[in-house]
Length: 177
Image (cartoon, rainbow, N blue to C red; front, side, top):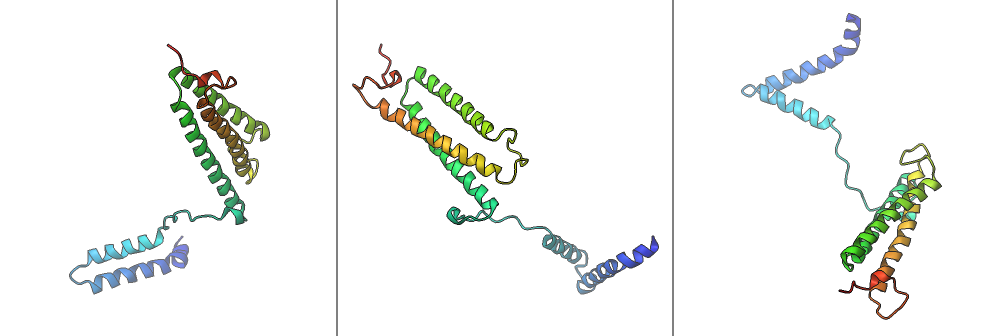
């Protein structure tokens, strides 16, 4: 045990005592605070720096799987926001009974979208057991499904504004007293 200390620990302790002596000698009046400042400076230099904010990514020229996954995830998030805005427009223009029916339809659509993705990639879930490209593939499928649903919701808003068209769904007509 003593040999281990002399071989591996001696250089460290020698540097440690040299730094401590330097701090004590050069700070005759201060002493302890200078030693504390040196320790804090060493601690700050040893800690990792936080990650920088995400830089904008050129998705047309993405080449690594990490970049492709990030681009697909960003696209899915944009499609989700677009779909949510269209859904809010549909709900805002309807009466209470119609809102409940539309909200039920949206919940059913979400269940369908989840089941569709599961059918395409069974057993993968959100884990990485299916490979590093799996999250990208899921996001691409979800983006496509959300684009279709968004167009359906936007059509519902347009049809609600038409009057006199006999093929407009009944939800487009306001409830009569």
